[in-house]
Image 1: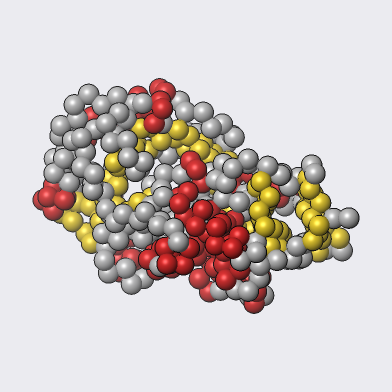
Image 2 (image 1 turned 120 degrees about the horizontal axis):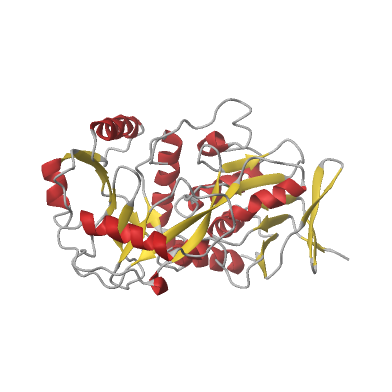
Length: 388
């Protein structure tokens, strides 16, 4: 006989764990979280960069960040886990007049959305904020002191631990290979050694979500794409409280949040093909090292450390925004995937939104822009250059 659960969540990373936590908070604890990895966070969560920001060019993203920030302020009181949130800020520098005007336009959107903490800086103010950075070619920048860094695994464990305490079950090392649909309604989840009857199935499997959806004949253009982070050996000349610092084309760097004392160097290569490749490319790291050397006033001889470097997968959609919501067919299927790199920071708002969809059978206004049906409705998010 198959096991039974009211809700089956496919994916036990930070998004799936947040959904489980918020379902339990809403009074629904008959929930089973299934993850293919042997340990929690084995997929994308444990490979995330751990950034958090309010500075987005779209009001919906700003609202999701606002929600998340409020939740993170009381996260330890609610879960017993410190999210390790450090508000060092995000600094988006402009090296060209076109980029500066883009930042100004985005800043106006942010102010209209109520993000009064974000400010525009001139070159002198940028130099004062980051005295370790070469700013001779910088025309201005945008900065928000409420942005910063957090620990993805801490937050995931906090959500999961609190969910377990409320009766939610977690199955690790189990892969869902089939969503059972009968008469247009989700009925179960199956895989090797897995047979679970459910009323609701939530797909929160990150970059692996598209593969599962195609089993149902659903193709929402959700692609796995490698993203790499190069970590250096200790770099004391980079202050520990320095902000995440961006150049025009999206190259950015920060102090290593894992405590290694080096820098994390990040660039979302637009030429990276779709794949499940999670191997770090040493030559890619060397190229980023050269970028860092040119940007720091006192670079020394930073060396990229393969031990401190890694790669993970983004689940990317055409407009770089997630699918959060249900589809008309089959009934009982909800998506929470395709975050394009923002799953960690937006997991609190996502978890709450999906829980409301199941508990109250309605989509909260905050989540409506992320509907999986937005493309066919002509409501996709507009392009926003290198800031997604």
